[in-house]
Length: 177
Image (cartoon, rainbow, N blue to C red):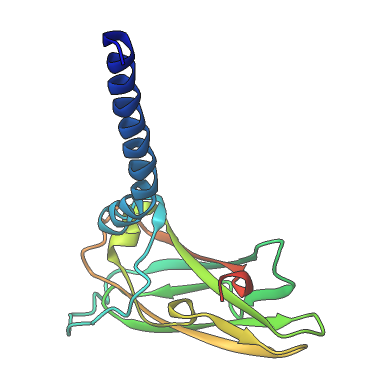
């Protein structure tokens, strides 16, 4: 092997290493982005884990309007909607709202809900203590199911935020099982 061949081989190894590094970094971006969104509330992403609610003082002087939104991804044959469209809540108060999902097919289907809170800054103060979004939901053929959400908006919510939207999108999770 002459010097040029050795240099080319060395360059090829370096380029292969760089390509593998870029591939690995690309793979790591998704979980890193999820962690970043969980910490900052960016894009209204809320935690998909049970919040531990410490006793807190309810601010009876302030009311926040919470609007509930439900959508279903096109690959999931369900109907999905909140039982009530809006609710006025006091910061620090534990609240409950229910959503209803119905499988409109003749086959059993699994779905997974992904929550979002808007505006994004409000997600930092929005805690769910019970939520159907924490796990996959199985609906048998034609089954309808009421699914509660227990939540609290912490009193530290900035004063300029008086309206919050809690949105869920259900996705088909059969391919992930």
